[in-house]
Amino acid sequence: MMGNSKLALVGAFVIGGIALFAVGIFMIGERRLLFTDDFEVAADFGNVTGVQIGSKVRVAGFDAGEVTDIVIPPSPSIQFRVRMRIREDLHPFVRADSVAAILTDGLIGSVFVQIREGTDATPPVPEGGTIAGVDPIEIADLIEEGRRTFQTVAREVLDLKAEISATVSSFDETLDTTNLLLADVGNDVRAITTTTALFMDDARAVASTTKSLVADVQGGRGTIGKLLTSDELYNHAVGVSRDADETMKSVRDAAARAQNAFADLTKPDGPSQRVFADLREVLSHARDAMSDLAENAEALKRSWLFRGFFADRGFFNLDAMTLEEYERLARQGPYAPLRIWLDASRLFTTTATGDETLTPEGRTRLNSAMAQLIQYPRNSPLVVEGYSTAATADQRFLEAQVRGRLVRDYLVDRFSLSATLTGAIPVGAEAEASPNGDGRWNGIALTLFVRPEALRATNAAH
Image (cartoon, rainbow, N blue to C red; front, side, top):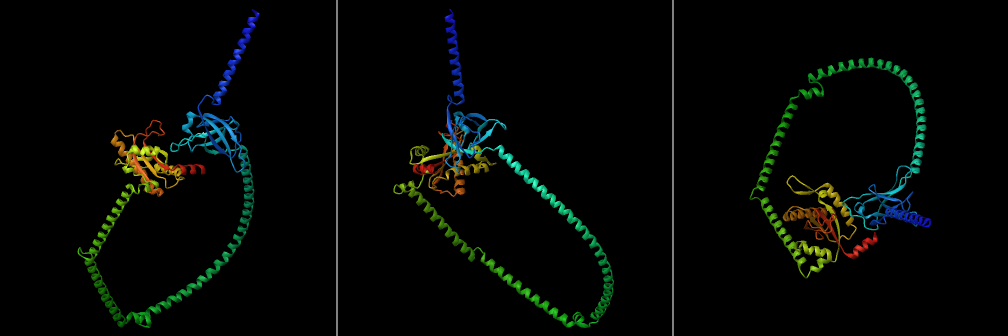
């Protein structure tokens, strides 16, 4: 019986140890995401203070994974690359414009990597992709910066003290100078008083002389008196006035003749109307010639003899293409389609007349999307796919068509795109690869058709 009890105790101890070991393995595996789907992403940092393999990774404040590797750069000019493993269910939050930052819990807490969620306008970061990193702020650097600031303030206070002392000394000197100036002003006032008395005597003499001159003028004596009392001067002035009247009459006659000539020129059967009629006829012939030229160009694009020439240059005859043909071309054609999805709520607004138009935010989002596509060859065809989830098929078609043309016209004008290589097509509501995951989309998709060799060359360069 004693032997059986010992065996039972040993068995219980072994079973308990195995259970504790299994629980430990499960807890470690749960922390290391061994039993959870995950994906890998990397970020570059110039300083990785406190970051270790196994450090926590948070996405928007949520515990999402851990650091799996820290790649040491071969030279100081290259940054450290920190690889992280993150839960797959948080993948939609980690976008191409997400930013990773090294933070601490409080002032002395543990170090972790915080990934800020991206925006809806950018796609999720691919498996093994790289996002931007922000270096941590060192407490020692802040203390050193504060110490330097304090030293600068102290120097400024000492300099200010010296300047105040110099200012007080200058004020004393200014006060002494003012006293001397007041004494000099008294002497000057006395001199001015004496001069004023002499001036009054001179003024009385000038007044007497002025009375004498006025009397001479009234009596017709002197040059001015003769001018004012001479009949000959008056008759001459009258003659000048008469000549001026004759001159003004001639001017009025010339203006009347010019007005009559202009009236003859603007008559319905006048020469100017004949010139305008000839000009309108020339413009009409020019419009007819341009229309014929455009029709000939469209015919060449559809001709079997020139079809290959325009196809090599990215010409898509979207007007003659059904939606099934376009989707088959996107899947099986010689180009690799690159799509950027943009939601209608951020792009368009409805006016008072019920028409849709681009919003300022929508133009900003289109500019940001084109910044991602501009790195590829400019001869790559760009198609604006219009999507709508309106109630009826007719409404979906019209709304998708208007949205596509609005965005296409804006891009051609804003980025000077080739009108031949830029088109729009209404798709409707069905979107197999939409970010919603339900096979539907409401908005537009910018689809750039890039040749595979150009796509490989661009990706290799980046």
